[in-house]
Image (cartoon, rainbow, N blue to C red; front, side, top):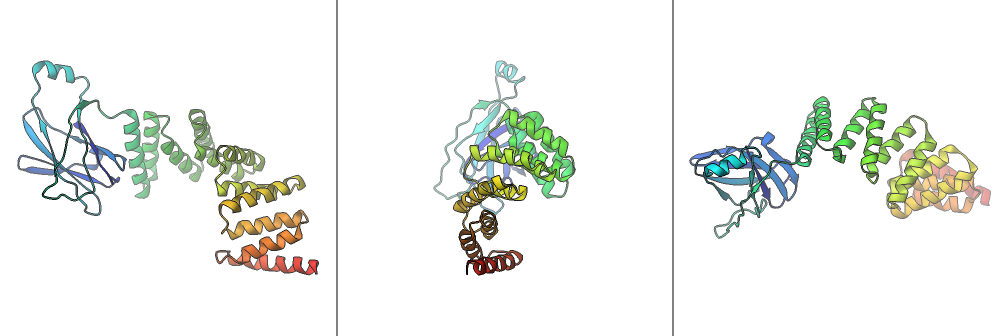
Length: 315
């Protein structure tokens, strides 16, 4: 089939395309459509080599329909036909608005040109999306095959590597997931989910120091991740070393600067401060936690008792 690139707005993985020619209309099968972005998708249609006019209409899952655009297929001269056989060039249809409903006065500007078939990255995107759909439909085995296929198409398809690694961890194949993630870091060290998943593997296997080191590397790359700061604080607190208590308090404070409505982190900060002997600051942190309605009941009871004990010591 000829690959046609559609450009517009509001495309989704569930967007459908209908092709009409002569007196026939047919919805293009999902395996011949590829969602690339909200502004771009490709479809494959068999145009034949005779004169023909095709009309394409895009529809989103909410029923919102694009204006209809036409493209003309002209027969190739013999020398052109010989030239295109090896590469199977396709047509590009540009400036197509997918979300706006048609109006009588609406016109469409099209530009048709020849391009090459989908790139390896585009094929990887297709397999990734199909893998997500398979997983959501309860077929993790098929999802795994599709994500592996995406990585064969492009080693730099990070979303497929991340999804496959998460699936491997969930199914107990931790060593394979670790190797996959470490290989990903050699390809793109800045891709933070690889580091976070490796930190989780280290924590789950009891290697807190390795997890701490990995999370500290993440903070160097991005200081705006509250969850990462809180995880660092929690690890320092669990290690129980006096030298790490101040680091724990500092990390909880940074996490709360970014997300001040997390009651659990206020309780963690209070614990670290009490262990440091800063009872007044610990009382204040417990009070901050108790003001938050999202604080879990068990932590609320704990925070209330600890605050009372500290207040009695202060009296």
